[in-house]
Image: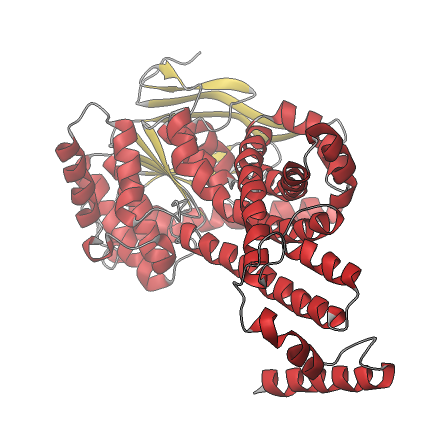
Length: 254
Length: 271
């Protein structure tokens, strides 16, 4: 019930602002639905060849890039974070590098990766990778450093082998931290892909937004707003999905 | 160096920690103690007197600054399963079930046994502490008393030469504590286990111990007094208080603790 009233209020406020500014500059919610119903809402999976595809396809193209970049970031990030957490010397030495690189905005990586890879698609995936990897590295390393003394004492008294220590104590104790990192990272990855596709890409939801803006037709603003709503919803779903997997995997740990 | 007479010899052990300002905090000052096989010894004293420090030294979790500890004539240099610890806060692994917590210990310490023998050891020790119904539960699903029973079962399952208990019942309600004390006492007696327990509960110390070692206040805590507890075994926690020696022994311990408290307050007042 509170959702219904507040969201309804938001939509009404939006419609009023749109009427004040004029629907040509900012379409209201009603205009957005009317303008984009056919084909964008009613047919999410139409394909007219080239880059003229339904929003379902565009989102899938973006998700594919995210899956690759984010998947790589997860693998590499957990591995690097593990080394940094287990080895005090490397952890301390590389900390300044990580602290500097992690604050670099996603798009600042784009020109250099275009120069290195000479390919827009690979560059977009690299931007996702490099954006998403920092919170994964940092949280994995912190998780390992924060293993409670109680557990390491048990390991010492029982004389667990290095292998058993990592398997039975380090990994389960670190999983909740890793998933905190993965959850932050998936949000950043989604943020980065939309931005990267707006700069240079063939297809994808970011490309769709920029393409609609450049086309400048009557329904352009409505198409852009619809795409923004889709981007938000997909981002939310990704966030909840990672959180859900995290809860499943770290069952019993909390 | 003293000739080792018992299972454990604590020989002139001092423990000091470096302070941030470059100084040294001396926690323990030249502690000498012999513990015989099968003996149950309690360490008692006010908080901050170094009881837990001494227990950690026995466990090998930390190293003495001076002096040494011998177990069976061998110097303690690192922790090991022959000196298993029941930690104050249980220290169960929260992602393992009751069974798996104990199994991890048994599998690690007895890799040479067959899987069936190890499983049998685990089951037997779960039964010993009456937790068969909770075998497949996670620690988060257990009460404090049950968790401590798992910790005790885990420690007993690997059959240590020396069982070290760090205020094992401190966090439990009176009823649970009484039951667990009784259980622990029976187990120790039946298996002839040697044990050292840190406690601040005088009645708990008297019920379980053959000797109570009283530590003076820190810094530089020393053994202030050792009280023999000649109460006949098997003891019962409800009947032991009726023994003619009980209140005399209890008064001796209380008197020591009160004296230490007075000294502590005097020291604080002088500052």
